[in-house]
Image 1 (cartoon, rainbow, N blue to C red):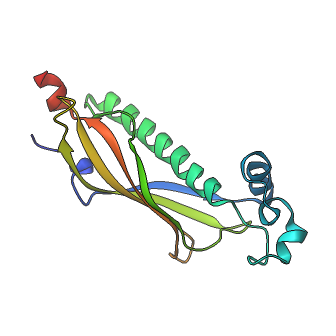
Image 2 (cartoon, one colour):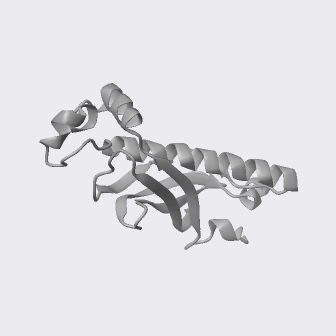
Image 3 (cartoon, rainbow, N blue to C red):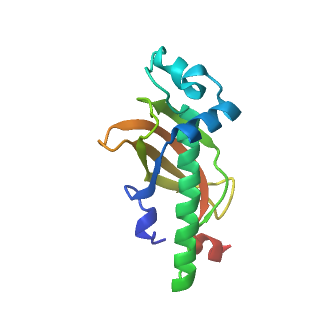
Length: 162
């Protein structure tokens, strides 16, 4: 099997960026992580963070949104060019989720993923499992979040062989 270079180990994909506004931070936190340093700018000044900051779950959720948007745009480009991309299945999970520094209102965060490799699954003929490392950096290039994950993937050649 010859892999599309975009799916080879070491391939890095830039997913885009998001500016975290105070309004978005508070809205997300009110719904999913209502801690004082995420929902109250005044109370956040007296916290360990010293100011309103995004929930780590918010930064992770934005990664997912940008990942899906990037994948959708790639699929549309490939279809227009007559190319077939791999089919993605579910993820069995993630490991090593780390939040290295807070994301404050006004911060722009840049997201990416890097493919570490893939291997066929004996339990699901035609499917492989792809291992990824995902990261989020601030404008200064400092790491604010990272995690390792996996996803089921069926490469076009494997689907044709079934």
